[in-house]
Structure formats: structure tokens, C-alpha cells
Length: 71
Image (cartoon, rainbow, N blue to C red):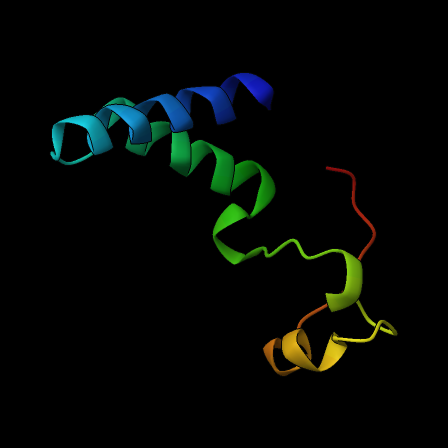
């Protein structure tokens, strides 16, 4: 997973530096990450935004399923 994330980030950095579109390698890597981990449908929040915390009302309208994770 780390290798895929690093490859996707490298493609984004190159795109940002040149102002061009992400290359096919970057798109392929992002598709692979999404296939494996559902990255296109996942949001990670922590701290006061989590359920039962002081600012939970900010993220609550997003709905979905809450699970513990490691960053």
C-alpha cells in the first residue's frame, strides 16, 4: 500500500509542478488504490470530529459507517 500511495503522490506532484494532467501511471495507481481500499469512497477523520466528540455534528451529515483506523 505504501508503494502505491507514494506512486500516486509522485504523479500528483509532477502534475502540480507542470500544470498538466496526471499521467497514465498516476491514474492507473489511483484506480488500483480505489479497487483495493475504496479510497474514492472513504473519508478519514479524527479527534473532535469523531462520533461522541465535541464537533461530531460537523461530520455527522455525511452519514456512512464509522470504523476505527490507523494513520
